[in-house]
Image (tube, rainbow, N blue to C red):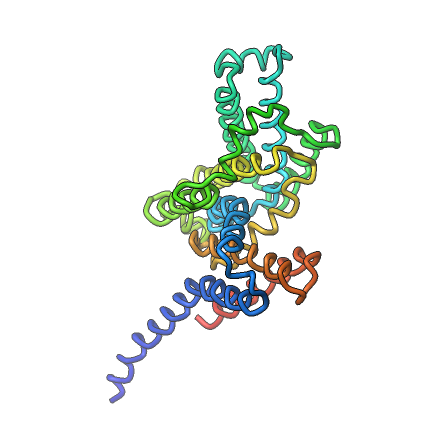
Length: 353
């Protein structure tokens, strides 16, 4: 009897662990379904196709950035500079496209770009896109290199670069707004946000494609396994042969590229950038990652949960606008409360495991 009882304990313990792990995986999607039900109850406009499509489209920016944040956080890092980075990338992109569209190049830099890409609207747009992606990668590289080789806490490093990037866009815009001047260029770029393919808005297709690529990279490649190992235990990962420095730096580069991709979708929406562009996007991205089931201390990464988390944040804002339950001006406060609640839930599930 004793031996049979002893043999029955490990399977039960394993079952409990599986149930708790499975709960963390499905929790974001359960919460998403509950919010949809709440929205349907508080407003008859909520379940209209136009409203739901609008919610998914508006969540694209944070969803794309949050995919990159999933890699950083899963690897035990943190990036508080993504909002300021987004503003800088948007401002530089528009500034360069305006310079290339001028009748005569302002300096040797614009003359060189004009020689490489031409002066047609398509060439100017290609130059702006490539420059945005390059700048995003460089900003992420700067964060990763200083964090890794400077051996400084990522919170401190990215807090500093947050100020640097925001200060640079304020200087570039002279405290004002940088707006795309070419009407022809704006019309050419406009479908990236306002267009659709087979009835599905382009931003939704873009963030789903980026999420699929991120999930493939995180779940199906050695690099993804190295990221999770690094976040679980740096010492164990090092002894296991994981290239710590390279993996950590690459997570920040991926974050920077994701910020640039989000900006490529964002710019055609307004056609301008200001010093307040991307304000509090870092809070929303981190909140989406945490809601999605990724532990803030690292060691796990759930890309599709992150996407659900980003949509949840936009659904909350949408419900607040459509109903009179809470003032829409308290969206930021509600999102801040959500990340605290999500952390408490994560801690409770971890203790029970």
